[in-house]
Amino acid sequence: MHCAIVLESLHSPSLSLSLSLSLSLSLSLFMTVKWLMHWQPNPGATLNSQILAEACACAEGLGGAKDGRWRTAMTFYRPMPRDSSAPPADVPRDFLGLALHDRPDTYFFILRAHRLVLHADASIQAIMEKLQSYKARVVFNFEGFQYKLGDFRLRVGKCVPSMAETLRGIMMEVEYLPLSSIEKSRQILEEFFDIWQEALAKKSLPGHFIHIESNFADYGLQDHYTSQHTAVQYATCMAQLMAAVRS
Image (cartoon, rainbow, N blue to C red):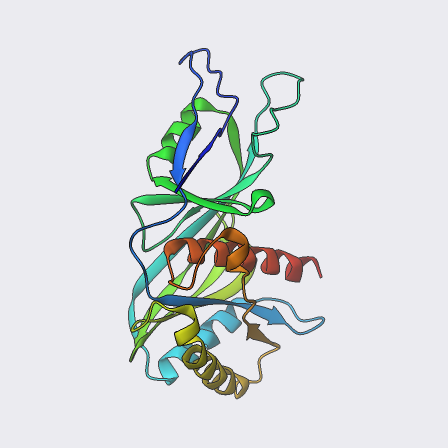
């Protein structure tokens, strides 16, 4: 199934063309299930790098073996009007772009207002920059360390703007490697999360990790986990982090 969306009015004097991109709504390759969690500070508490260090120490304390670094980048895009007229109704007013650490060949688009998650070849970023119809308003990097822990892979990291070191959030990915079914892996992930919370509680930190379930059905996503599920979770996680900072 495909959806053609116009990413710009795409009238470029230099290219003299109108372009619409056909972006796939589904990936043929199923992935193993991931949960994304973000740090929720206690009322009045602030974020700091010590919380991140303690979370990494907790991963190692549970037996996790450090397995390199990871980075996922999320970009907020806004249209760049070429004149005073309003953009066509079928042109998204804003959307998110996502470069996942484990899919370097693919770029994802999350159109929250339309409940769509799409993907294209990673080269689409260079095309968009050349055509100058959408502006990258702000870029956030999610980055940190990866750990192997039995049947799980943990990624603990921070969320920071690309042009600054201001800590905007702390989050983690938990990936359960044996299964690609969301429902079949739910109980195992819940049990792991309980163990994680219990271990972290011993450190008496001013907050806790929470998991907000994304409504995948709203985006037409099924039980078998794909990279689109991860993209939707990052959009949900980012919204929660921004809300936590504002409060």
